[in-house]
Image 1 (cartoon, rainbow, N blue to C red):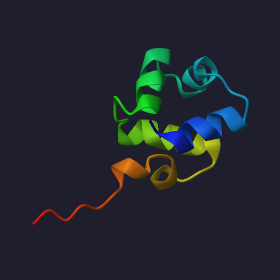
Image 2 (cartoon, rainbow, N blue to C red):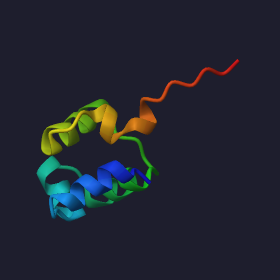
Image 3 (cartoon, helix red, strand yellow):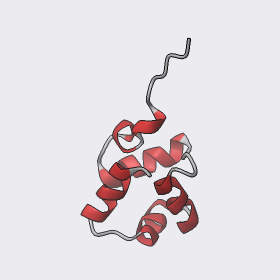
Length: 70
């Protein structure tokens, strides 16, 4: 689960439906993004960034982690 994303939405007293409408994406997609079942594309990440005023690297930190596999 993407806790920072969920916590930010709740802090602003927004429902998943309200977020979906504000970003012009489906409610199901918002749910799956929050659960970590789907990864948003760059455009969608920027929509979340603009809505919450928080960098996408913070909201979706799992997608920006660097892993050195040797």
